[in-house]
Length: 119
Length: 167
Image 1 (cartoon, rainbow over the protein chains, first blue to last red):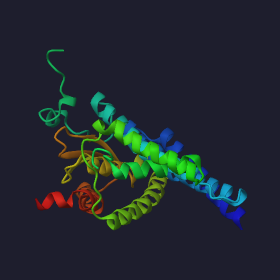
Image 2: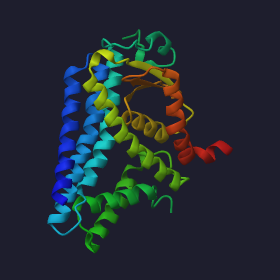
Image 3: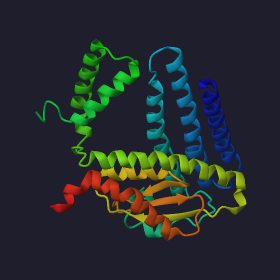
């Protein structure tokens, strides 16, 4: 019974991780590519970690909770890195399929978008 | 009290984190964890200018439930979009006007947006009033903004900022 559950979890995890990577390869611009690895992969890795926690809890007669930590750190770091990548891309004006927010409307309020003339 | 234990919540989190790290519950590790949990916030307190207060723990739990559900939902949604092919995507940047004021609440909102269906937070304006969000596929940008505000911002505001509103 537990074997079936474990296999299902690992399969689901592998499929989602694969789809995430597929998204990275197939999508057309930088911003849409960001979505695959940050989300489809999150659930994929989540499933793999649940499977790992279950397996080691059953085998070693003690609850294995390392995986909770991995999940926690993953969920904290994945959005932050995605945010910073997107921010850097906006700053560098990477080619985008979606109309990017006009830098002009940003400039007065946002020093990030404004080069210092003294430089 | 405040000077000796500047961030009780952070201390508690660190103790639990330590116990998870060593993967066992024993008196020795509890003491060691408590020591670290006290020492780290004490040494790093200059980096934590604002006191973190959770005002509605139940709302927070409910929020975490919604978040997990949305991560699962979002993963299926994005998986379907990727498999359907990139040609039919309608990616859009939307600007979400923020009602949140504290840094922690804003960063939590940005993280939530990045973790949930087809959206990644891309940029926070310097005055902390608008968040630029990139969506993978949407037909109605305004409905999306309304959903983000209703689903995530309202509970976050209730959890972290409600008392500030009254004064």
